Length: 241
Image (cartoon, rainbow, N blue to C red; front, side, top):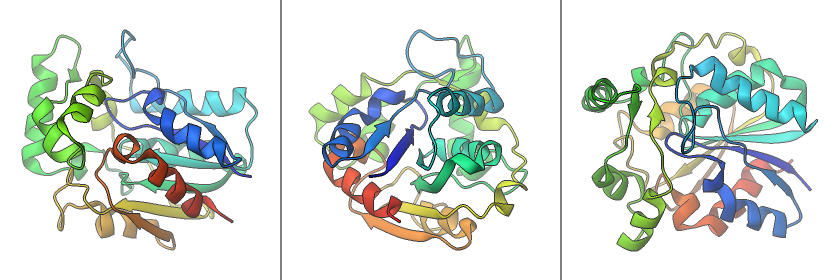
């Protein structure tokens, strides 16, 4: 039995994992899906990256979880790297699911193409609270390109505005890169959120981990909606001893 803590990405909250959690638990594992501070509907969006990280640390410590497999999806990869620095003794393995792996001193926004940088910066400036609302067209074509229109619409309705500050905070990751915690990179082969090739998740992001276990599966960036059972099975493989 493994203990999984699943950390969501931008625009999501912990409920995005529900179908994955259900399958992991049906397989005899324990699974938890906290919501990062500033994420979800009708919450204060005025948070920075450190507050996002601290909210996940607090969740793990408050439940006294140890020997965990900590997974981060997309933006969640930047969070689990900082969580690992703070509580390494509680973590058995890290899994990065099509997740950002930043170089020391970088921000998330440094790791997306210039046209994406310009779009999200414009959206944040036009909002009343420095948040970014993901356009449905991007969700449909780039994020959930392996699902039909009905699933795209129903899952899009679950999203909420994303705080912009955590995207632009520069992260000191020297300690992360000194940790000996085993790492896995789980790659979905049809993920087109970062353009394949120069900006893609694998090998650009994955290779920064040094020694890591590589697991891949068909699917889009939002495979927790389009194929939650298949994703749960691959998470088990990525997290096994």
